[in-house]
Length: 435
Image 1 (spheres, rainbow, N blue to C red):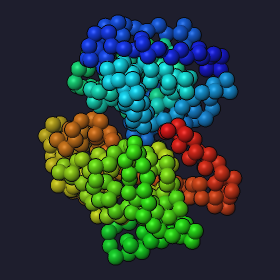
Image 2 (image 1 turned 45 degrees about the vertical axis):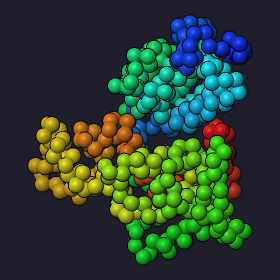
Image 3 (image 1 turned 30 degrees about the horizontal axis):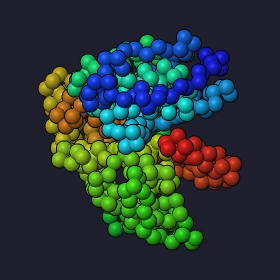
Image 4 (image 1 turned 90 degrees about the horizontal axis):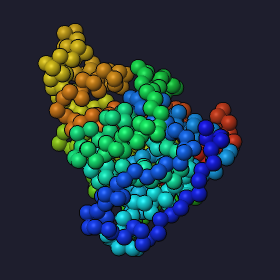
């Protein structure tokens, strides 16, 4: 369909037409007139909505689709949904600062995005707060009105988006639109493809011991450029705010966990760091339990940013990776609670005498079973958080493979300079699409 699609010329709305008609509330959430359905092009191709569990191949399918778009599609963007919403909020802020805070900025921002993207590819579509929900229901419709074809991945069916969210009824029209205009495909699979055995590197994760500092120095030197650019403090900027990098060399950055995650950092900071560095060494990663959920969420957001940007990651951790986000005591309590609620896998684990160590070892091998069990515990605030936890472990598993570490290094057995140049193009495209 895309090969025969001729996207319409995007007509930007006038500033006058965006002035408030009734009240400040109407300017933010849209007056009754603004909420009426926009006309969609009659030849607008249906998009795709691919959903499935951790490691089922959603992101790989998205990348293959984006890489093979037909030549007549000149304007396309492939971006992680988290990054996309960061940019939308930033652009809304810019418009309001330029034309006044009571202006209805959403149609203006939507037209600007549509001008850049006749095909828009989202990875990890989700909606977890009311502000995003109110923006998305109008933004998606405006994009389609301008002829933008949306292709997205998600961990849940459209009807499950923003489930139990505040004012969810206002988001339902967006769900209905997604179901009408996107073909919904279930990619669920019992296999987490990111964890199919690969040659292990045995290098990216180290326990905290005396040898850890030696390992870190070795990898910082290997991933950095000590000869031309000795380790030094550096600084990046996001939205006019500085991000301090304690040690940088070449395209590698070295942080202590508290310097990176212990402070009030967020997705925008991590995305900016990914634009400036290709490799990250993070020392002294502690265990995070229910008392340190904020740090766990920030660390998961950081892991997602590293994975999306195809960067490399070296860690020293206080506990094995399977115990980073849940202590043995929490897992033990979760097993007993799930068994009490009737979970067959949890009952089996108790009946066959499995101890907590056994279950911990299984977590990386059988996330499907364990996440189903853990979702029934009190240690996650909801399915979104449980899914993020499972995804982080899955991605850490893949990033620990030799294949991930060697990718882009230009090693002779991998293809030499050609392989390095090809990977540089992948990184460059990610930077362009996440601007």
